Length: 185
View 1 (tube, one colour):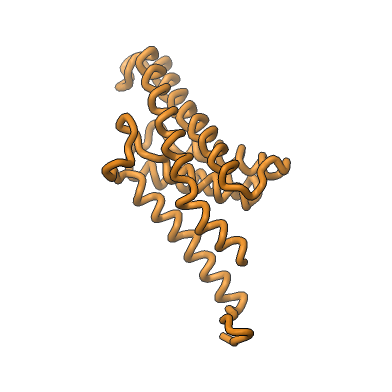
View 2 (cartoon, one colour):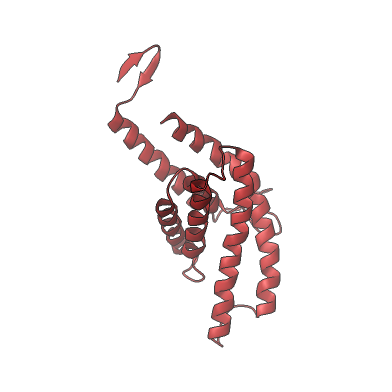
């Protein structure tokens, strides 16, 4: 490392390695926070969707394909923690692609309030994708372990709204550190 004007400068290789460590570490932290229920964080038995927040923030700064890949990878990792059906990979992939598409159309500016609104909307999209998967399974297989269609969609309303509110409120906790890091690169 060289020193210039009191600041330490990292080489390109060191910056790349540090960036990879921060990206993987923040994604892993969100993955580990997903099954945890802290006092005061839940609303109607629903916690924030940490991985969705991470995928939205990632997709704002990256192309559509990268957003989709990040969503699939984190969704499959979450499926490994929770269960394979309904899959989280599909909903997080859709969220990553839609968010990156918004960014490509220059509809997103670098503002935490806008990002929180996008997280709110994408949480509803993700919950709806999960409810659609359960509904299709219920319609296609008569021995479905899930609730009736009416119960699925009634529960969907509560889950989607609670998840959207909590996720958008917790967005700054993940957005500020990652945005600041990526901006410094």
